[in-house]
Length: 119
Image (cartoon, rainbow, N blue to C red; front, side, top):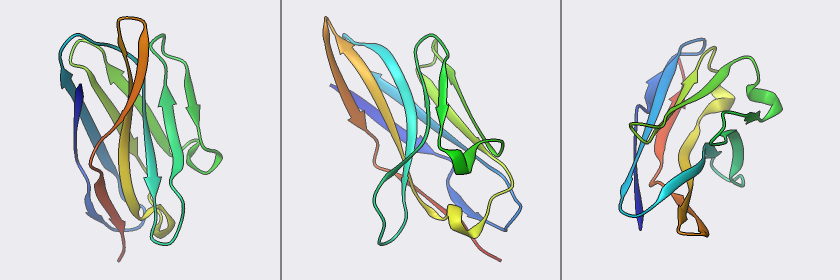
């Protein structure tokens, strides 16, 4: 099993910045992809950004240029730097990690962290 703990959410004014963190813990697994999704009230969960184990990234179009995903493999941590935040970015942000247990790949979700962009 893999446990994910997110932090860094909160209330920020439009144009502000936040940095989310997600730490993975557990035993007998190696991390493949790490990423972030978000879900706004009344909407489906959507991709924010993904990073593979070799560093390739994938961003949702609306986040390109504003959000940056990074990871520290030694710390089993993924980060999401969010700049120029807009009210439309208000959502619960979820960490998602793909972990190999031997040759079996499983994906795990964090509990989510609330990001509210409001003046």
